[in-house]
Length: 148
Image 1 (cartoon, rainbow, N blue to C red):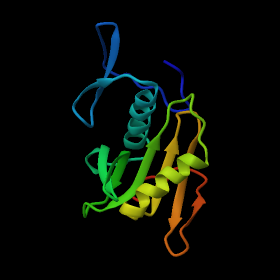
Image 2: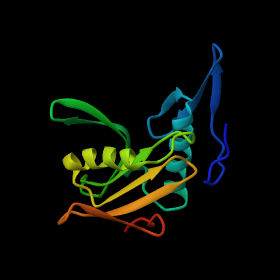
Image 3: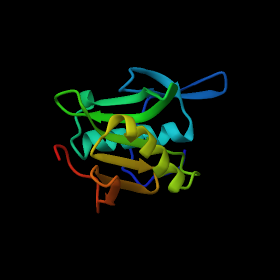
């Protein structure tokens, strides 16, 4: 797999019927090793091991109901009151982060109303603080250490 702009980690990977799987310690099971999953696994480990995000506060592949449609957030960080505080969206390294990606997070945030979001394709990372008063966001110079 591609080297990302993140620390390198060792993962449990297995091959079955010519298909690769990676063990997701958050979901406690093997999942298909896609390029986006490669980014997710690295980034989650980075958040936990480098930025001190509590693993128990991170939900992966969280389903949301938006206007009768089922959507899925790549990851959500909750606080100690079980309220969402951050949306985390991952893309494969080959997918450029665009305005469409930011719009996707804005749709999720219409439901969750979080104060922060992160978007990463493993090569580029963006962390923003949401200004709920004017529905704008400001780019942070780096991903904050937990608690923020």
